[in-house]
Image (cartoon, rainbow, N blue to C red):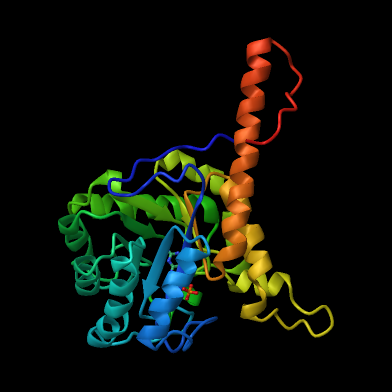
Length: 306
Ligand code: PMM
């Protein structure tokens, strides 16, 4: 499938699926909680993610795991700002993962160049206006409610159609509040108010999101549906979160093949390689198609991968 190219003002076009590396500065995120609470270690990790091939480093200071409680804004600010500043000063493209307008604004002032809001502007009525003022791209993720209650909100008849339709409503709302439509990135919100089957249904139909005409971000990393897929065949125990990276890379590359603009992952190295493989195959396919069209041949050219 041909890759759609999107121009997001202020961001490069990577000509392949981009990789967003996750940097959670939280004590309680589901797979890396507590690892990067020390700002020095967190900054080092952000730089390491970039060196491993992350195109974007996504800094978050509030866990959104199912059942998680909100943290006070001051605490979120204290966690994220030094960790945005450090890598941004070194030229790393940093996004801020927050549901709070004041955190988004402060982070952009300190060098963040994308706002990633898992609530797509719904958790904080001031968010869309704040993003509009800051003029940076805005990730509008599908969201039905706060983490403490979201598992009870996973009720769909046609999850693919409903999630896309709800994201369109969220998108319309942020555009009405002043966000430039050319700055909107959409995300189906895997694991957020989704049952396991919902996540798989969404992943199987990512190419349907092309109809929205906006870049698509997908966040499968280490999520529950992968742990359940890889459950121990004897005990039925889900595979531990830290042992889901190979499945994450596989999911990421399949998302890339369906046209995803970017994938959000904890372990960057494997996914950075995988999206390059996907891009090489795509480019080979395009070249081969062109050669066969030019020569009038129906056979594929066997020229080497560029
Ligand atoms: N998932 C999490 C956090 N932030 N942001 C976007 N845009 N998409 C996601 O799927 C997403 C996100 C939860 O995962 P984490 O706690 O491991 O960061």
